[in-house]
Length: 206
Image: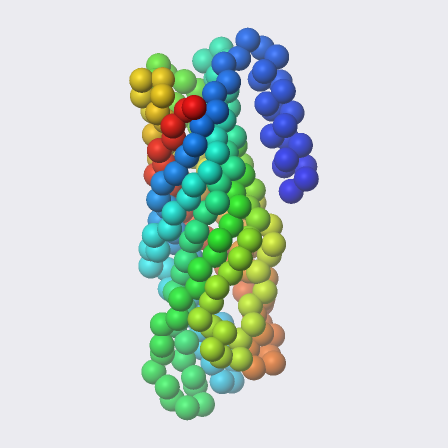
């Protein structure tokens, strides 16, 4: 994560030194998250992560740097996402109950790409730090282990309107695991949980 932050700073300094136009603003919007469906099973429980879309929100700061038809767009966002898990108690033959999980995270996306008039096409990395998790699985003898930092990528298209507003549609994929393992009733299991998102944002330049 430190290297990622250094990359952002270096990119901004390089862009500033080549007749660039730098604008700062606020950004917010909605994101639709999909989690890879996974199964984890022990003698007592079976957990199934559902892949249904869950709607969340994001808000934060953005910077847009333009030079020679290229743009660089670092952002700092607070993002909320969620997922659903079906829990089946095998020993008691209990029909599966749906339990919800929610995550609050800090995202550092950096898009770089080409301008086509007011339109933009870009791609870049995104670093994520999980700030908080809230899970109804705590009602069971279940403990999840989430990675504190993950990395992914974003691709997207944007449109700058009247030089004041920025509308972006992006897709985000994960390059690292969200979770590394889970302990159910004292039994440890590994799993590879990943998420992807479709993101719609509106930015206002100050």
